[in-house]
Amino acid sequence: MAPTPLPTRPHRRARARRGLLCALLALTVQTSAAAPALAEGPGGHGGRDCVRTERPLDDRARQILDMTRKAKKDLHLNSVELKVTVDGHEVVTDALGESMTGVPARPDMHFRAGSVAFAHIGTALLQLVEEGRVRLDDTVERWLPDLPKADQITLRMLATNTTGLHDYVTDPAFLAELEAHPFRHWTTKELLSYPFSHSFWYAPGTNWSYSHANYVLLITALEKITGTRIDEFLKQRVWGPLELRNTRNNFTPDIPRPVLHAFTAERGLYEESTFWNPSWTTAPGAVITTDICDLARSAQAIGSGELLSPRSYRTLLNPGTVGLGGATATCPATICLKQTEAAHFGLGVLVVNGWLVQNPSFSGYAAIQAYLPSERLAIAVSTTKTANTPDGNTAEDVAERIAAKLAPDTPLTLG
Image (cartoon, rainbow, N blue to C red; front, side, top):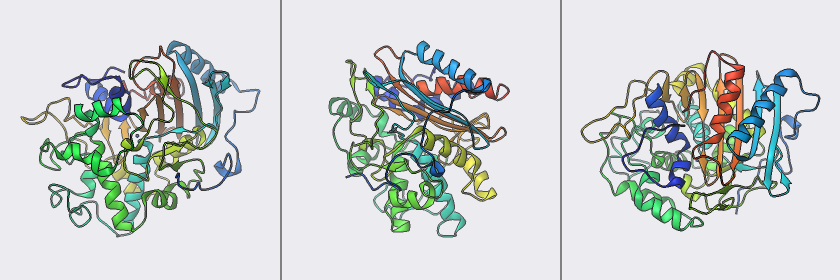
């Protein structure tokens, strides 16, 4: 990945975290006590455990696995988990490398999924709109009375990153605290204090810039709209209907077993980061873990609009962001990014050459869910690092290689 340089170059931890933001920066140049699980025990997925594809593999599965092995070697990865489906049917599921020294990685191991939750939240919000409970263009002052310019900011703006709020993840003061104290638990109030200390980049709705604060606020609004905690809301609306039985929120740094362990050199020393506190990644109730089979199912369902009407699916793909973005006197081009038909932020998803993507990357974990509607192709990849792994979301690199093989005419170009 070759992201457009930021005004000030943050340390490696910040670059790794901004999986979605980094993808958008690069695309401008070229075109994120645990709540109870839905079901106890391993597996789910329509009654099947998440296991390696039975041998012998067919030619297509062997080719995908061969190129994944090569990518693991090229990128010096500790582990790679992958699942590829076409029209919902498995092409290959596997796990390469180790979780910890001497402990092989397995497809059923759980990892942090970060901003994948944003895709689920976007779909659930559109369901509420379909039911007439809210409108996307409702302003949010009744639910978020303490938000500056709440009478000008709408649900659509929060969901599409068009509010003009600063991103706390790029704030030097926040980054310094995060690096010094990776186990700190963050509250919503503490996170929002950083963007609230800055003026808006632009008038709400007039430009585009990525900010984690938008989804922290959107989650708070959704909880007040529905009277339901966000993890329960997502279970009812997304995880339950899609049988994502190994996708769940965690209110603590715990990860359900079996665990895919993570390591990183983001703080200068290669160290285990599995249980660094992820509370800063978004609002409480949407700090999710998953496994590779759930991630592939999520890619297919969200990417195809399975839970939405055709009209809402069109909104998911382009909620009005195409054509927005661009530098102004108050917002540099590295922050206010041009949104084009080929590469833009939808409603909780990134749309790239027709692919629908989410790509979390932080604290030693990297992942991607990608779906190409024209081919009904879903790709899910999760990676972990060695001390020699390059910066950036390496799961994207693996997915791009797989996409080039299976959909050569529609590149998955994220960097």
